[in-house]
Length: 419
Image (cartoon, rainbow, N blue to C red; front, side, top):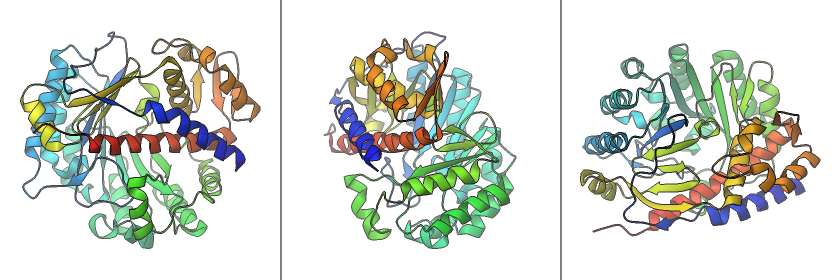
């Protein structure tokens, strides 16, 4: 527990400064970088049919009339990036729930394939959208990685999260996942552990269903994360949050999955190659389009406006949605690289020595020594690798990193918009 508290404080302090952006009303398209650089295009669709109390992502209820104008702006913003010479190796569509308007999503993905020739397309969805007509449309649109927000197979917990009625009970979710299994290169289930009323037997039942009944390609187990903006909602709807049992729950997950899955990140476990959710681990940068999207290119962090009307106004006038940015200092870039790359379990040393203009091994020599002393990482001539103990330490640090990102979202929501 002492080590956990120290790691928590370390990441909070380190990310506190980095996760503060400066407003810039007019930001051009970031540099596309060299053709050899591997970049991901992230699209954000903020619309949901129901708002979960634990979620701090930028999301709103789907308007009664739909969101066709928003999807049209995604396509226009994509063309702006293409006109500036940007190239992307893959596309990730997150939300929100990107599949709330399947036909609009399909048109948007068709344009991404036309403009950038992408061959890897990952999309997030919810169990109620695993209908044959939607799944078929996604397949036709080139989607090869599908991530489904399950969270739990415990109906009582689903009810507390506000997901039982809109997204289906445990039996419904299992049936839809079973029907969809095998139709995509990767079918992933997003799960949450350390929920307020999640008992050890409830977690073990989730693991049994996933491990024995469904045998999906990939499983992502996220620790419950809170921010000042979500903590009150979580306590009211789901119960008070505590980290007391988090490590025990994580160890249960790792032990249960060890025979059939391998860790592709500290909280993602795969039967097949390639992780669907952790695109930031493998890429050299990513550009985000859509309201509430983030970008990270060449050591600079960018954010798009969190006001959907402002986003539409900006893109329809011919500019991007970017409204804030911050160039990270050398040590901040080094910490980001170490945290993100080692999150993927194994990190080649060659990648650390010159990334975004910083020698990570030199900048973070003391941290690397400390992690080795703690038994968190192992080292050989070519790479660093997380130990099983280190995997949990990285879960703790990444939890705090994403909490800092969530605080940044709250900051972005508070920024004034043009009138």
